[in-house]
Length: 301
Ligand code: HEM
Image (tube, rainbow, N blue to C red; front, side, top):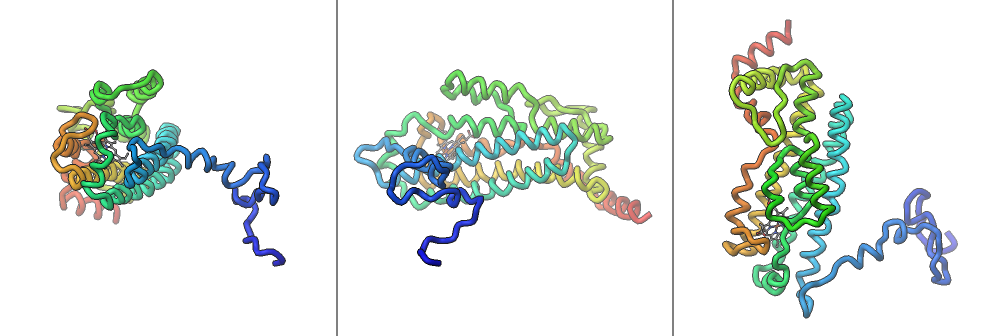
């Protein structure tokens, strides 16, 4: 090559048009203009004055979470639509993407452990009363998944648009609802639980009997079973994130109260029982080796 510019393949946003050599602005699409990099890099504004060294990490990690939450919500919306459209393949495919992102989010929280409790104190006071508790998108993920606790709304100061978003999420059917509807359409005589409620009595027994049928015969109902287990993994990832988050919080602030006004670690520990699909967790405990023997001999017949 005559010059030492790297070869950039067509289709890569960086390759679509190099900046003009005279340094003037151009309408040609570039990596920076396409991805709005200057605007993105201008979004980290310190509250501390003079700026505390670790505040940049604190801002960027939260912003990165919010970006990933945006994509998770986008994909989960599509997962739910695919489930209502009976497209189990597409629902499972997109759910795998969500699970992969969630693994990243569980790991990512530990970057904060490179900040010492003392370094955090250099800017923690100026964050008051802001808190991750007020993350609208985190609540949207919970509501869309099927964890619908409207009480959290009482403690978050909401703009009109935020309230509208969360109320819409509360009102619309969750993925949990979509799953039970899908099972019914596929011949499982389950009762579809209302969002925010668990089944009781005969309805619960009948639904467990049907879920047992699914879990006794994973090979027979492979696609449905795979989807159900991916949803359990999504539920598990939310739990794992909560667990890792609370441990990081404990390392950084010990027993101090949260900036959002909660008791801190004590409150966060109380959320470690939240599950969107408790029946899917419970059903595996109902399997017995007799079921497995029967299932095995039936499938051999
Ligand atoms: C120094 C790091 C962090 C500390 C000390 C911390 C502390 C806390 C505390 C004490 C709470 C309870 C509410 C309160 O009273 O404030 C909370 C809630 C929460 N935080 Fe963090 N946090 C940190 C990092 C993060 C990050 C990186 C995220 C990513 C988005 C995050 C998201 C959340 C969410 C979503 C909640 C609500 C959890 C629930 O109510 O179930 N936090 N945090």
